[in-house]
Structure formats: C-alpha cells, structure tokens
Amino acid sequence: MSAPAWIAACVVLAVLIWLGLALIGAVRELAELRDRVDALEASGVSPSHLEGGLAVGTLAPAWSITTPGGGVASSSAFEGRRHLLVFADATCRACDDMVPELVAAAGRGTVPPLAVIGRGDAEATPEPWRVADVRVRIGSERDDEVSEAFGVDVSPFVYVVDEDGSVVARSGVATLDDVLRLVRDAEGMRIVAAGGA
Image (cartoon, rainbow, N blue to C red; front, side, top):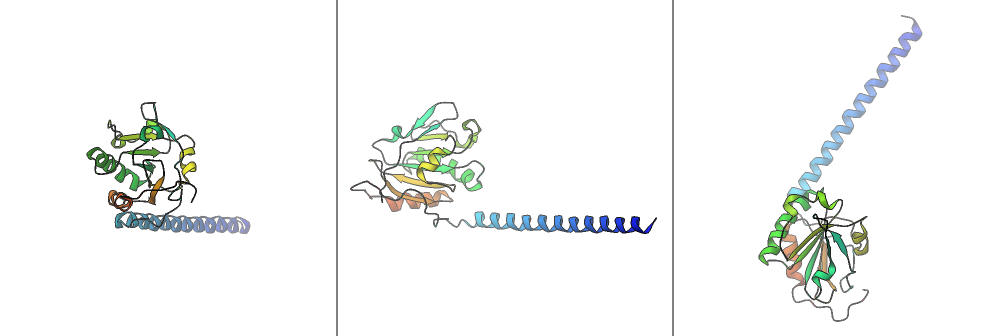
C-alpha cells in the first residue's frame, strides 16, 4: 500500500472513531435526560410555577373542539356552571396518567364538570380518556386555536371557570391531587366584575 493510501486509511479510521465516540456521547446524554424526566415525573412535584395563560378575572373566550365521534363540544355546554378546562396532550405522560383519573372524579362529582381539550386528531384520543358522561366533554382542538386563545403552551394545564365565564383559578398541574388542590383553593371564589386583569 502506498503512503497516500495509508494516510487516507488512517484519516478515515480516525473519522470513524471520532464519529463513534460522538454517537456514544450523544446516546449517554439522551439517556441522562430521559432519566431526569422520568425522575421529575415520578417525584410528583407539581409544576404549579407554570402560571401562564389568561389571568384570573378574565372572561374565558368561547371555544369548540371536535369529539372522537366527529361531533362538536363547545363552551356553551358549560354556560352558567362552574367547570374545568383541562388542556392535555396524549403524548404527555403526566396527561396520560391524570386525565382518566380526572374524568372518573368528574363522573363521581368530586370535581366540577370538565372539558378535556386535546391536541391532534380527535380520533386518536386515547381510549381511557373517552367517556359517556354528561359532566365530561373530550375532544381535540384544530391547529392549537383554543390553546392560543387561552395562552396555554404547556400540558397539562387547568382553568377553573366560574358560572359567569370568568377564570377564577389556573395552573400547570401534574396529578389529580394538583387539580383537587386547585379546585379547593378556588372554592367560594367569585369574580365580581370580569374583565382584563
């Protein structure tokens, strides 16, 4: 083998070794990040610091979502009743754990009636989220339009909306206990004059 061929072979070998080491490093970093996410989700720590979205006292905008059966659910179904708006994503592990528990709690009357506003195709709504209960509406928004109207960019996120349509509480949540705490904290709260706050 000639000298230039040896040099080329050594360069190719060095590049392959470097790429292999870079790939191993990337896989390790990805595994560490996955472990951190799993530990955070398992810790049960409430992300209540996620306080974006509409301010308390603001009138909630009208909304409509597509149900898994192809129908439409809208804010008009909740007029005159205190209710919860739950923004969730089926690809979110906390949402996937919390939504079925929350739906069951609404069915028992433990929490106010609720609407689960999911992202993506309504037909892809997870089976455990689906329910035939008049206190619960489940569906998907189109092009994130409801999330944008409510200023929501994290999941799960919950609003407590009063009988007159005013937001009385809101927070990022991770568990059913977080939602129960939010509902309890909002109990008895009334917005005297709804408007931008």
